[in-house]
Length: 161
Ligand code: DHK
Image 1 (cartoon, rainbow, N blue to C red):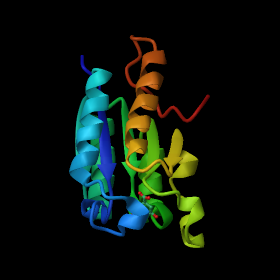
Image 2 (cartoon, helix red, strand yellow):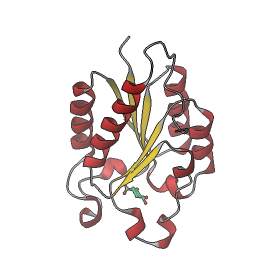
Image 3 (cartoon, rainbow, N blue to C red):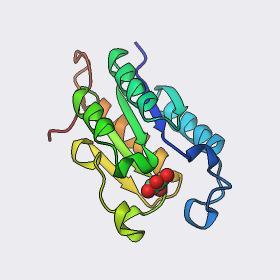
Image 4 (tube, protein in one colour):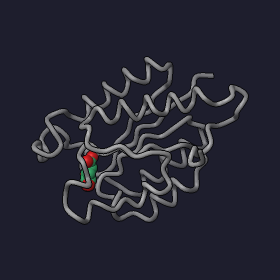
């Protein structure tokens, strides 16, 4: 069975390319999708690529990824990273490894961006690599998946060592 990875993008990421280009660069979300499809294909993974400006929809997709036994999730929750206990709880609730990604270096920006509700329940976090971070996150998940015994039902949250 081909394993799948979900790439979930939160609010305002549909505006990549025109949104504060000095912070987020000039690549569009379509460019991010293309990059993710390339990396997923290289690892023989199926890809679900989505964006929503709505918190509940992102939560539903995290649940869906778990229900469909996705091998991993790459999550850029946008501003919800810093505010959403509900998205943090969804990540904690599912047995799927989540890699948190941010295009910008959130620690070099405003103080309110320095805290991520998601980081503590994610397998790993990446920020500051621009859109390349998405590709790196898929590479990291692929390495994690490859380490699992092939008989393993799911990847587990991967939060342990
Ligand atoms: C994207 C956002 O929309 C911000 O709210 C985060 C993140 C940073 C990013 O860098 O991808 O603070």
